[in-house]
Image (cartoon, rainbow, N blue to C red; front, side, top):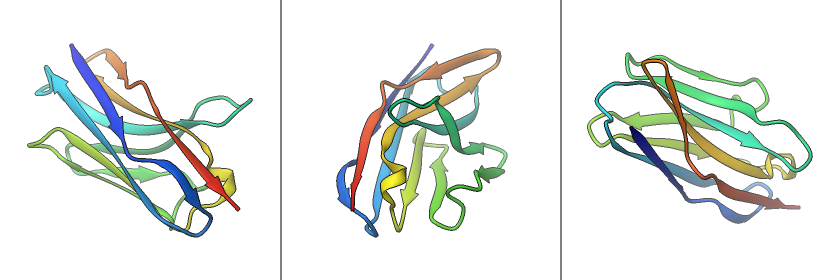
Length: 115
């Protein structure tokens, strides 16, 4: 089993940056992919970025050029560097991991961007 814990976020001003971290614990050796999702009020949860530990990453069009995903495989930590934040980025951000056929979620961390 894998446990995920997000950290970072909070209240930021539009145009500012913040870094989210996700620490995985438990049976992390078989994790193949980790991702960031977000869910804004009244909206469905959406994928933001993914990283597989073969070194491939993907970023959704809505945040490309502003957000960067990275990870430390040895420490089982996933990062999301968010730059030039916009009010539309306000959401709860969730960390997700895939291990074989199992999917795990963190509890989420709130990011609020004020204009």
